[in-house]
Image (cartoon, rainbow, N blue to C red; front, side, top):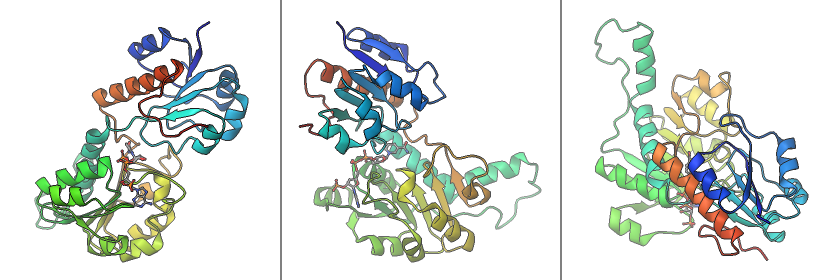
Length: 323
Ligand code: NAP
């Protein structure tokens, strides 16, 4: 008998076909609506493998219903939606999709940085509203990107790819990280700084750490108060890392100049979210890795992980060591 795989969202036929070659596949049929919890709870009961997204909360209560589950393959590099400790103690492997989305997410992070610095969205809206009357000396003036100081909090794969882009813009790049990276310092000309110094000195601060109990609220009122009034905060990692209420107050009072956000504490946010009332916020609906090629690569990588685990092997992107 083939193992059963449950897929929590409608994914590309090519990937489904690969899974079907090795397993009986059941799939939530909607591409743009997440699987309801009660459906997931029902489907997980007899599933051997789960193919899921960052929008699915895979917690201990869900795993307790899953008698046969061996592998949870997340189609994302971040896996804060999964209780990894609970999976490990139940002998369930957990995998993610690192690397394939690094450059695409770094592109988006830099695009968001530039859009925020040069007020691209605000300027485009101004034009479309018919407000453009004349060229004016200080109209829609922003902050320079070239030659500015960029502070990267979290110099992992994406952080390093961002640093490379910044160097091409003649930026001075500071970073802070759990582990110091002398090789990256030498290779890309980066300067290590502690978090407070980085916040004080940077014109742009980009947050690129994973969301864990340690990084929750990493940027709060105290940290925002250290930043320059002309500085810009960019967050393309996960929402809960930046305290949104503190950020709102800092943007409203002019403690910092602007923010570019791809991620939010509770996603999706509605059009009535307080941060969207501020003109100095550029907000995106979590599209960091959203290029056609990269999303397909992530989809295939999650399938590779799942298939390898079902075949009894060690999946290439295992994030835990189940007992
Ligand atoms: P990564 O290679 O694991 O890099 C994470 C970096 O953060 C590592 O260098 C790590 O330090 C550092 N770090 C961890 N905890 C820290 C802390 N408490 N303080 C300072 N630094 C800390 O991950 P990645 O592939 O670059 O991805 C980073 C995150 O981006 C993901 O976890 C995900 O949440 C987010 N992401 C978002 C999107 C999007 O669509 N917006 C797309 C892709 C990824 P060490 O070197 O010591 O381990």
